[in-house]
Amino acid sequence: MAIEGTYAFNPDFGEIIEEAYERAGLELRSGYDLRTARRSLNFLTLEWQNRGINLWTIGEEKVSETSGGVALTDNALVSGTASYKIDIDTISLLDVVLRTNDGNATTQTDYHMSRISEPTYATIPNKLTTGRPLQYYFQRIGIRDTSSVAPVNQNDLITLWPVPDSTTTYKIVYWRIKRISDTGKNAANTADIPARFLSPLAAGLAYHIACKRPEVVDRVQMLKQQYDELFREAADEDRDKTSARFVPYIPSY
Image (tube, one colour):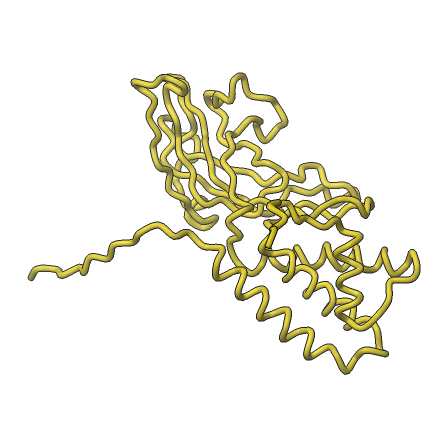
């Protein structure tokens, strides 16, 4: 028998929404049905981001702007400046390194930086000490102007200690968890997820839609169970498969 030989199945949001309505035992009929489903999709992907680390959302970036909005020249930190912006769609940081001699195959060096909490940063006696940065404090809540509806700074911030000095050129490289892209208004858009999560996405949307429709309330529990099972299967596969080695710690007396 012949097989298709293609591996590009990637339905757009219009098809995913239609599939979800069918799983819920409903029909997609009106523009409002499409709009409410699109809104539920956005809530659904936000929910996924609270479930743990999704490997496809991990990315490597460099700090490129000070907290005051000044662009860095070739990503080089500014001597005497402690705080810098993190990309606006960042959820959290996984690893941060301080890089020197960036791009030099012989001398480029990455120094691991330790993450500290707000209480730890607050108790540093002299926050203006300069030198090679060793620690960072990550502010996950954007700075907002309470007198205005719009935020002054939507970006999270990373604050370094010691404050970078001028002895060499430093750069901050970080690995982050980024937000899943919004659904948008175009039904022809595709989801910002791997193909293995398409079925959990349709199942989750079917569950969310059923919660809004009293005529299918009897299907809600079944849809929830199906959604949880499909997501668990996909999430179990979405993991790092590198080897791990555990060594017992036996202290001497």
